[in-house]
Image (cartoon, rainbow, N blue to C red):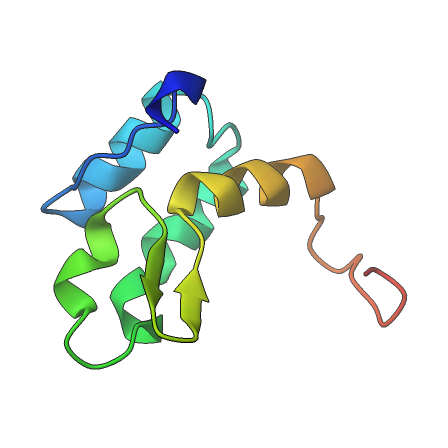
Length: 91
């Protein structure tokens, strides 16, 4: 996958991961940056995998799978969500 230009590298701090996503153009808007800064990926990982929360890589263990942060950033940016504009028909 590295041939696609995706950064399959680990980040030790959330700020480092977010800076990388900004520098590579995955995060483009202030609202998506703010969302990434307000939620720790490690909070959604199974026990024992929390230290991998700052890696920009997919995490798979058994039946558990979480995509890489750059994938979420790219999709969220493409959806162009606006505060107060999301309802039951959004997705």
